[in-house]
Length: 275
Image 1 (cartoon, rainbow, N blue to C red):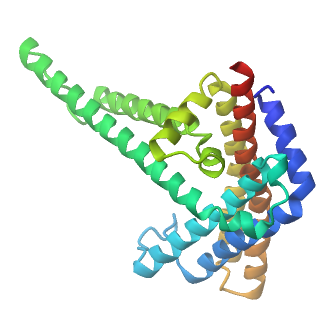
Image 2: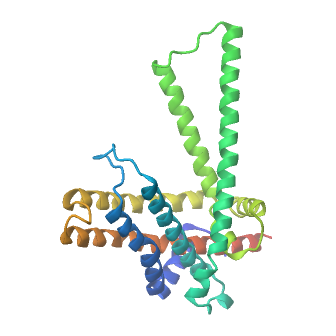
């Protein structure tokens, strides 16, 4: 079982074509509808209204929206990535079984984020200390914070940070499937996803780029539609337009959520073949 962009697409398209009605209903209930309610009830900061600040109610709505969307995504991933003997389970059973994996996924992701943050902080402190020591010993004056050299240095640091962050995210690609289908601890899950994704970085990077390319026009469409017709609460046409603008996102979310389960299944199969 090869793991490639083509194999992921064929397997994802096959499960979506087979069960798209179920996936669409689950994601509409847990992702699209809450997102529409959020847009109707909470004014979010934007380019036009940067002064807007989210209060306690706003953050509460946002967190609930995120948790519901994650439950819907994991449910579709579980349905798409389930083995043949598990496909007979009802949607309700799968849905109820995603709560514990979701907690494990969040805990593992937070642990990975904490490790990465501590590592970056330590590296940044070490580089700053080294630069200061070298400057003192050699008598070389550090560049001014307004100079072009300093700006270039910051750009390089930012680029390196983004590159490392992208690398870590790709290495965690199998984590949702591991949380759903394997009964192992948080630390073991991180080691497992690191091992499963070894040697597949180019394929995972290509999949991530495809998702980004598909998501950008959808985000732009939603933004431009909101700019033209106003918020959903402004009028009935604005509400209808806001609901219609979420449909392309529903299609993308359906494929993305199903792909999460498919990626795990194919990576696990490739690992077995390589053993």
